[in-house]
Structures are given as C-alpha cells and as structure tokens.
Length: 532
Image: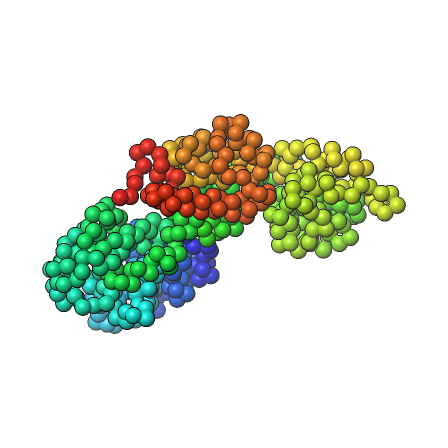
C-alpha cells in the first residue's frame, strides 16, 4: 500500500537548509514508522519526518516513506554516522526504525549516547510488527479464552522452548530461516503437533502472504517465504478463517497500470488502493495550451459579455483550461452568472463543482456526447434569447456534438481550449513490465489511452486483465488485438475501478472453490515466481 497525500509538515519543511542556525541546539528524534504500511504512520511521525534536516534510514525503508520526508533533508544510511554527531551540526535528526523503536532495535544504546552528549531527544512510538502484522492477518492475539501473549526473539537462536510450552499465544520474531527447528523445539517441549501456526511474510504491505498450518506441517508449508516473517503459535490462529480482511481484498497485491496523469488519476488510484491494489500512473497524453491563444481569448470575452446561452464542457481538461484562462484575466466562477452550463459526465461535473459551478444539464446513463444530445433541448426562439453555444475542448475532438447541436437549431463556437499530444515513453522497467506481463491489470479510460499506451510502451501481455470504460474503448482495444475482460457498466473512472474489483473478487472466489493456489494474473505467465 501507498499514502494518499503528503503531510502539511512536509511542505513547511521544504524550506529548511539541512543545517541548524548558529547557537541553536540540535536534537534527535527516534521515530518508529510501523511494520511497512505507510498509512500506519502516527501524526507525530509525519510531522517530524516533514521537518527533519537529516533523516537516518535504510534505503529500502526510505522508499516506502519518502513522500513524507522533507524534500530538502539529507538522507544518511544507519551506521555510517552517529546521530549524536549529526545533531551537533543539523537542526533536527530523525532516526527511523521499522516498527516500534523500543522493540528489537538498538534504541537503548543510541538514546544513551544522546544522554551522555547532552543532546535533546525524543522517542516516537510506532506500531510494532508484534501487534500490527497479526492484525493485518486477521489474528487477534487474545480472545475470551486466551488472555496471555508471549513474545520471543529467536534471531540469535539457542531458545529454550520448554520455557514457553504453557504460553497461550506465542509471537516469534527472527525465525524466518529456522521455522522447522522452532516447530520441532516446541513439539519436544510438550506442544501438540496439531497446534495452529501462522507464518506471515512482508506483513502490512501489499506483498503480505500468510501460511496457516500446524506445528507438524509448517516447515514444509512455509518454504520460500520472503523476509521479514512473523510466526504466531496458538489457538487464536483459528480466527484467521473468519477475520482475514487484508489479504482477501478483491485486488490484493494486484499491480494495476493507470494510463493517466497523476492529477487525473488521484481519486482513481485511491479507490484502487482501497481494493488492495498497487496503482502505477503512466501518462499517455500530455495536455498543452493551444498554439495560438486568440481563439480562447475571444471566447472568454464573449462569455463575459453575454454572447452565449450555453457553455458545454466535455472533459475535466476543458474545465481546467477555461479556469486557468479565467485566472489569467482575474475572473472567477461569477462570470458564469446567467449562463447555462452542461457537462458530459460525472468527472467533468466534479471539476466544475470544484470551480464553483454546478452544471444545469448532464446526460443520463450514457455519459457521452451522444447521451448529452439525447437530453439537449432544441432551440426555441421564444424561450431562448440567444442561440449560441460555446464548446471549449481538445484539438482532436470529434464532430458528433457540434453536428447534433446544429441539428437542434443551435450555433456552436467550437474552440480549441487545449491540445493533446502523446506523452514521452515511460522508463524502460515500466515498458518491460507492460510487455512482459508484470502488470496484473490495465485500466483504459478512453480510446486514446489505448492507442497512446501501445504507441509509447507496447502492447500489454496476454495475461494482463484489460479493463475499459465503455463500448467504444472496448472496440479500440479489440482492434489492437487486446482481449477485453472488464467493461464498466457506466462510463466513469470510479465505475471502471469498481468493475475491476468485482472481477477480481469473482476470480479469487473461483480459485478458492476449485482449491487452486491464489495467484494474481501476473503470476500466471510462464516463468513467473509462484509462492509455495
């Protein structure tokens, strides 16, 4: 999983220089960031990371939480420089720990060094893997029958398992590579070989994978799991069948390609994350101003002076283009007073509402130019004082809407508000994933996204699920030789994401019913890594 937005502190921290003003004491914050899901960060953690001048963190951890870092912060690998030394020259040093700083880390030694050097410090607790990972696995560590929990750090080996033979619930850390030895030790200490065991790797991330077994069989069942892994032993493991909520999300762990700009894809990507997916945004078009601005200048002047009865917006890009032009002239939504405004669909309407304009007319179920024409009133010279319509849109827009409005008696000013050009190709690893089946699904929100993605990155692999926003986009996809698996029941990005989630849920249910291993589409291609 990934975070939705940057913390306010991150923006305020951007102006920091990375070095403290002369005479100002430095300080160290020992910050726990949780087991892996960035959304488990505490408010205090986000504020400190957004304000830190120096951040001490392993690169693998930094990649998960970088969005919350002060962009001007210096990144230092742990062990290369003592935080105390850094604090003497920097304003705020944030020393990051996965999980909670006080559990399984070197916090005590580093904090003691701060005390000796008289360097101010604070400790910011984080969610520990001990509680966080079982929660994401659907295993409560206590219930009405089992009230005690014992934590064992087995990383150094040599554990006397007889000391833990009577514990109701065991949480074992650091035993990823010695699961068989741990199981044998517990059985030898008196535990039944049928005692339930769950082993979870990469907990709280979209790579999380859990094997539920027994002490007798867990060694073979949990082969080849990724590190880090956490083991829970005890009857509470039985709750997983009823309470598993994270790994059972309909698109859990699916890598989904969203061929839209970051601005356009924000809400769509957030919706996909709620289904457990990992969205990757790859722009296929670039929106640029018209080559000559005079046409838009005349249109805005006509809009303000009462030349038009209607203004029609066919995309959020058109709304954005008009809004930017208004801001250049010192105008705002009040200039639309007395005008009737139409929007071709929900996304466009949402952009208008954000601008401060509520559309007067929208199509019904068919959110398209054709759908808008179905509800558009014919021109009536007795009811309509002006018969002219302003249509600001892309340079490559079709003529369907103009032709239909003309037939209804209206005169249209079809104005180029913006140009759409093909975006630059994505980085090579993205292109290889598209063609090689590294993505589980791709969402196409228009025919142009189909053409442009194939043009700049290549054709998606045949194991990739193809989801399209409507019949026209499906037709284009099929023309390019793609198999369309999912079509939204109405032409909106939200409906498309929902349709993909329903497809994922049905696919998962079918695998469970057939007793097949749960595999993502990308794991079905030849040579793909399969979990044991």
